[in-house]
Image 1 (cartoon, rainbow, N blue to C red):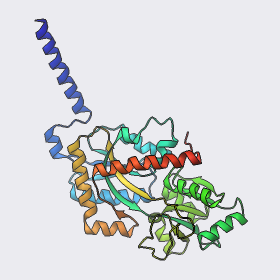
Image 2 (image 1 turned 45 degrees about the horizontal axis):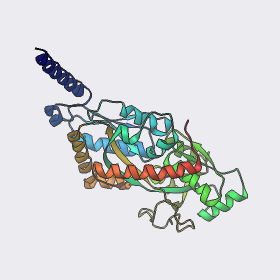
Image 3 (image 1 turned 60 degrees about the vertical axis):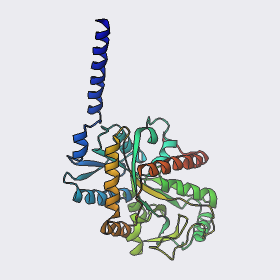
Image 4 (image 1 turned 180 degrees about the horizontal axis):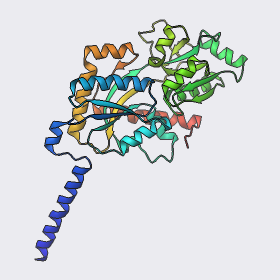
Length: 331
């Protein structure tokens, strides 16, 4: 009898754990096949109007055209993207709440010691969406037409120039701090709650300099309100073939890029992750979608969850070296 009681108790525990797993994201096979049966929330950790938001709304629209249930964008700005990422990490692991993450989250991992959040532990890679060139730009009213001009102007007028970004510990912020190091400039950093507010401040000349995403400022560059001095990546951008790289401007080895990806809460079942990845690659592989992305300054970058995981691991290692050097902290 005692042995039978143990068997029954063991079976009860397994059944209870199975029910708990289903409640926390372990979906039955039928639910996996029907996914998505209701709208999926795409969470952005930055304010509306910036590059992350622009890409998110484009992707959500395209998903919505193929998913009867649709996809909606939800902005949860704060903490340089940590607020939105933490919200997704704490959401049910059922695929109905996913994160649109720029690579700045691989930076904040090292500078926000007490967040209780870990990118690799708390989120599951779904797939890369796109890359986007970062550029060094200045307000058109400044007498600066090259990187050399910028360095000379800063040295001649110390304390006058500052550079804005989408927030502390974002890739544009780190790009500016790195430039201060390699060029010997002393521009002060001014953080905003997303690329949108940062661009507004740049156009108003509240901040004279930006190391931000091209997709956020292209219209103002065409209108002549902002001037691009250099591309921060390894090669020139085909949309601005006349603009040199930072290496061509006299700073070899200086290279900062920007990417955007989809991630889900850790523990999301593999079939759901694979479905999201397959649909993402189909969406960004569509010719019309690709054209829309390129027009907005994004370069589609389809791939697997494993490939994204490798990129995240490499960036975490890379940015740790940088953040230790410039001593940035969010808390």
